Length: 353
Image 1 (tube, rainbow, N blue to C red):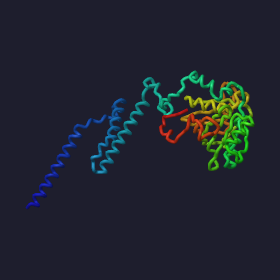
Image 2 (image 1 turned 90 degrees about the horizontal axis):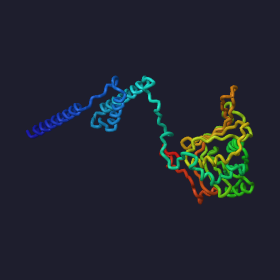
Image 3 (image 1 turned 135 degrees about the vertical axis):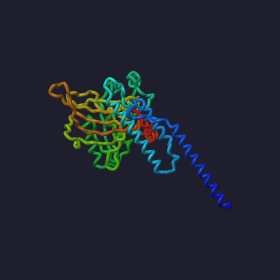
Image 4 (image 1 turned 90 degrees about the vertical axis):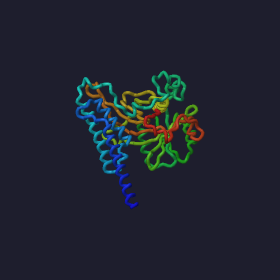
């Protein structure tokens, strides 16, 4: 008798719980806001509805549903509704007359959404004093022509000489010297004795050039290091032009911070100041998201002399700034102006050049 009463009590409690659950769900669906009709809604209503669906996804309204299949159906319904709203918004924008379209709308990109930098240069007047008192003032005043010694790391293979040869065809007054087993300090002293203004060292790993180090030998010295990637030689470029011995014209694009202008002046000091326009050689250093793209072209005039076209000479490669420090390859004791670290690349909208 007692067992029967206990069973009856348990069944009654289950029924009562199920009734309360159904009443709760009914109340929930009764107070649920009506969905917007996608076909007849305006563009602003569709955007509001899209935001509501996104908030629903974040709130996970189906987490109380124990049936896995029904949860999946609910998720698919929300995803499909989002897709329908987005396609409807696109169609209404496409079908809108030209006068209603906002011509001032600018697409958001990582470049134009970059974080504000305190060293961002608005005009050249901000850097006038620094430019007149840095290590390269004598070069820009025309007091000397750059003479550059290029060498390799102590351990190297024949592949690095291919890149050195391409640099010799690109940069005037570049002279190669074998490193042998000399220490980098001895190479610096040797380059000074020979009267060179800069020393360039090309390092390699896995039979590929991977690093370019440039040491400015005048005054107290300055060393800059780049990571070297994506090398394409002239032989690999279809229809490439042959290089000439004329001094090239230089173009620097998108160097907008004080550090960027510093790098620009260092790279500029590697080339003769007097440009020979008759050679029609053009070298471009374009900074994009702290990657410096190097391109070497020759421009040709069309028959009407009103337009030109570019013919690539090569090589092309990409540089990534690693460090700038005072002194001559004094990595342990040198005073760093900039030193790239691994975690500096985490923020996608933070750029240094």
